[in-house]
Image (cartoon, rainbow, N blue to C red; front, side, top):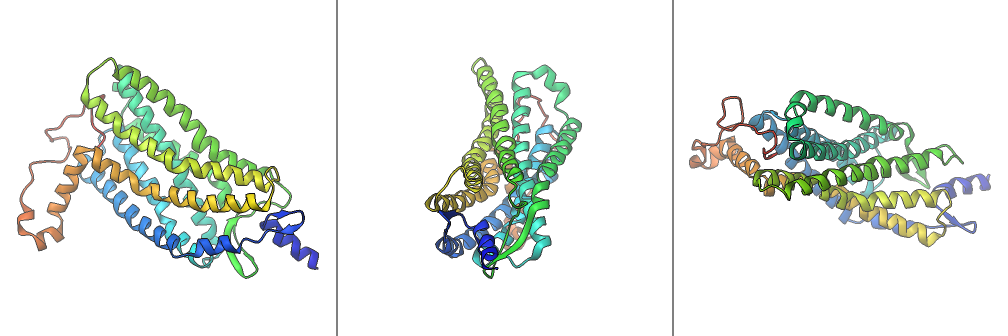
Length: 350
């Protein structure tokens, strides 16, 4: 009986030479005030920022281009990701108390947000590539209909790629500490390796190759033209891509190394502990990413600034606290009657 109990414990906690590797210090690090506070702050900022992006796209942009469709879906991806943060915030502060069903659902939604986010950034890069490099073809290909169809395909792929989280995530307890984690069949490393490779191939390697090709061709094309509008449109999408990789790549690498440790390729209690610390730090960095796209749009998108100013001038609170804020603004939405016309290759995304 005691041997069975020890086997259950050491299945979660890595062992070195049959000695259990204690990780109470790592749990204490996770329970510190910093992580719950940080997750709560990211939740508020991410929710507000991405909700504003959705509002701007519906109210002012009117979803009149393929780029608008991708920006909308990227904001929805970030909102899905933000949805999981209150649960993770309470989890790191105490333990998982939301049951098995919510463990599966929250883990699933979290992973859908991750995959769909990187896929839409990849589509936005392809969109910029077509607009700059293949202008004539883009006139036919870059339509709202094709953008909507591509978005549906991306969501289906992201949902399918996230199914292992829905299947294997469970609420499990070790020594009165309840966790929400993926529990794979005992002595079967196939699914563990599969999910780790899936994150690194679908979420890192494949997008990197596609984006590297797109932006290499874009840069080569822009070197031979002096169209400032094209350059501005490319800069914003490029910034979104770079920020994603900077904030998500460390976490993906650590996840892969942890997988190697779990299957016994990387050994040692110290290695295991260092990887756990690295996972908490890089995951925190990755979570912060969902707040940054709206910031990029604000600082690099001139139209987005105007839309936000227009929205706050006309909102109820501005009219209550500042009568002068209700003055009419000459900047109109991009409806069919707007003075703004869309150029397939030159439009600024936001």
